Length: 187
Image (cartoon, rainbow, N blue to C red; front, side):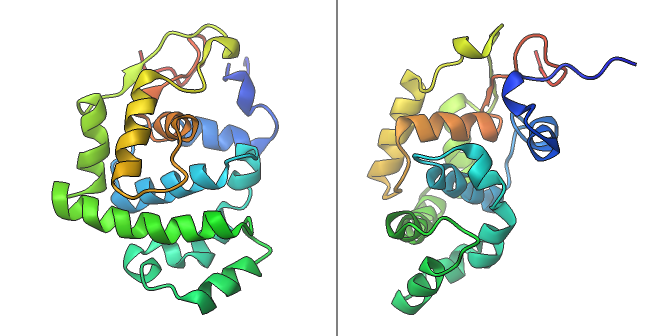
């Protein structure tokens, strides 16, 4: 039996392949998981996704299972504890961004009903399916990720630049960038 053909970026190890096979590009509509992924993508800024992915469970524990109601109440003592946590990326700006993002999340939910409703409206509720043949064709950002980035920033979100937004869109299935010969390709 031939091994599955996968996108070349995920071949590093089983952690990466599992993420590729079961999460990346799969439409995600759960608000807590969307909030998690938005923050994890932000934590990636200046680093590799693998670095963040390998710390994912530590992030979940450190940020109370991504419970927004708890995160908005974090005080300086909690921030200081997070800055000492070797299981996460100890960057003060990124840690404070999670708290600000929790506040923005609550405002978005109040205005639109859910983060899911708000985000998926940018793609009219269905994934954009691209037809890339090689990794070099996949853009780092698009006009749509530029727009989403600007809108998220207006809502108070932090660490949501266009490149981060595009990576987020790929991760949560708003965009399907699996290569045309990848077994996970939906189109």
